[in-house]
Length: 58
Image 1 (cartoon, rainbow, N blue to C red):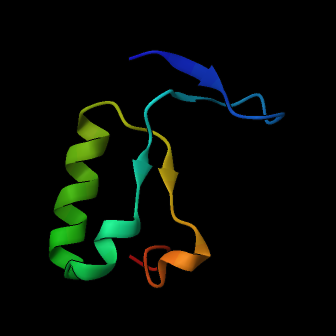
Image 2: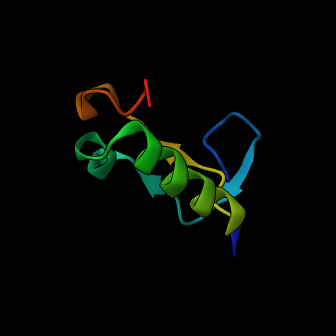
């Protein structure tokens, strides 16, 4: 996957990220499985905006 620099942080992240909005409807165990699968497939940027209810907690 293509990587980009995240804003002014200097951090390299995948150009494709994981939008966490859908996990608000998933159980903790389902969320864990989904996030682990994303990570194992190269995703290292996760959008967990506060507006996504409990996505930051999960």
